[in-house]
Length: 410
Image 1 (cartoon, helix red, strand yellow):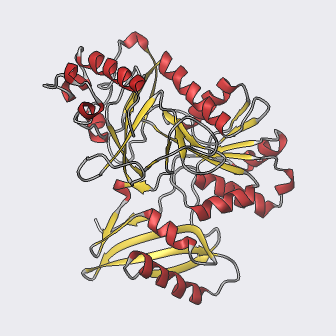
Image 2 (cartoon, rainbow, N blue to C red):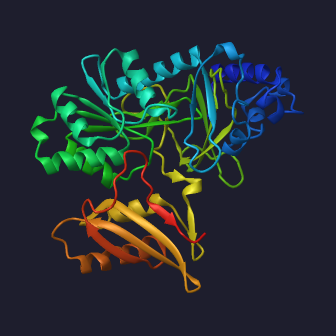
Image 3 (cartoon, one colour):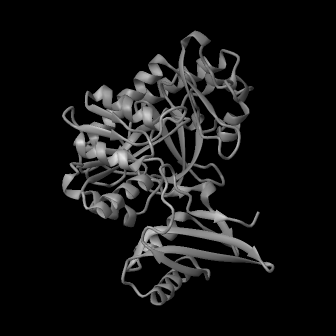
């Protein structure tokens, strides 16, 4: 993607500011003459940053403005190590609200909608991000947070919520509960804004069908504001990115070299206006591609593909690299198989054993499903697995991100 002049000017201003003061980037960019960065090609020679760098800066090493300018902090979960603390200025919060309101508008949400928010509040960016955008838009907000499904459904009916904000896992759980309780005629939802985890086409179709909504993918990460830096449009052909606030690159995960538009690689993000904790060339580990050409919706904002997986989601079994997205794609080819699965890898008797639990539709022959799914897995991914079909709803549902791949070898 060619960098715009306006983006380059904002990046140069960020670089000059960050290297003129003692802090995170004065160390990362030590020895680099930022005045010599005069083109996109020069910028692409600057070093990457990654989550490990941000963890090393714990707790407030990323802070790039004086203490009195910080109005809030958010944090990554820290489930896989030291959490990352992200400070925000008042302007950062305002910018985030502006971007999120654009997301709602892209999804056709108006001031007359009632927005039902189920992601968590607190240090996590999700719940408060959805709320910020809704308030900026001027719509009624129902800040439920996660859990207590009985209360969620009662409020959804009594308040006549029209927009559901959720992870795909929790949206599926709610859809199943609505169907189980036979209350679909009392639900007024028309739009679903779904984020925080990748989800396959089969899961998307099931949620849309059972909730009776139009679904939109929202994108973001804690390190870069939170959800709301991009969203899909009604044409479902990628996610539009607010490129007046963030600059995107797609690079080869192994070499770091730029990938041509249209080719899959790792997403790298530079913040253009962020004050509290700016990021330069931050490697997200998310796999996607820049979609060339104009979108049928007419938006001027560029697009990336929906997230295809993560570089750190990959597991290697018997010399074969396996991504969750491959398993999800394989399941779309098997009639009677649900979108819900768990992939277990164990090391027993000196060899790797793979077991795939898959929810299958009621009435299907489980022995036949074993054979069909096993053959599809072998054909698509190239290794043999033990397939265990289970009933719809038998695998665990989550209010947050669902874990579907379990590597028990280590």
